Amino acid sequence: MITTLLKLVPAATRKKLKQMLLDLVQSSFEPEMICDRLTCNGAVLQDTRYSNTVSFYHRERIRIGENVFIWHYTILDGTGGITIGEGCQIGAWVGIFTHSSHLAIRLYGSHYREVPEDEKKGYAVGPVRIGKYTFIGPRSIIMPGVTVGKGCLVSAGSFLHTDIPDFAIVEGNPAKVVGDTRRLDARYLKKDENLQRWYDEWQQEAPEPLSCKPGLDARD
Image 1 (cartoon, helix red, strand yellow):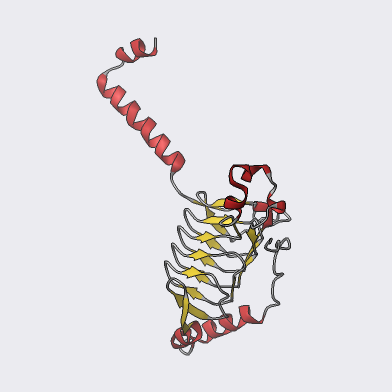
Image 2 (cartoon, rainbow, N blue to C red):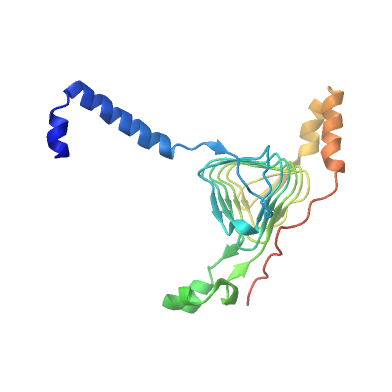
């Protein structure tokens, strides 16, 4: 019946309706930046933005600070707990992982899904913490148990499997420290007193809690 009715509609109108439908479908899946309830206690972060394409796993174990920006197609695996400090910016296609089943899948074989996460042997779990005002470049990977200091710059495509000190510039696979952001910033700070005051301000604030929920230890 629908086909018969469509035949009664002028060709030009059918074409226009088809394009409108395609535009509607496309707009439904277009990445966009949104704000939502991100902290464990349900508080609304007024100045935090993240993409509607960000994938949250164990969202209840992920703590995100104010003024945070998380771009498109990033994965946040909260199994072991993630803390993202105030002012961090996380690029597109970033993976932050707090668990790995690289051992457990062989130990359990086809019975892998029968055992709860918190009972699996060889199921490595470790919290990830990212300090304030750190930039994580696109397509970077952060592995379980890693702490990234405050004020860091992680270059695009970096692979982090060990802790990164405050104000480090890192790059590569595996990521290595190649510089210090304070030297990079100095050229701008010395020319503007306001910038220097704001730069000092966020470093003097009290440190945030390590995590919203204690991370789980790696299992033997």
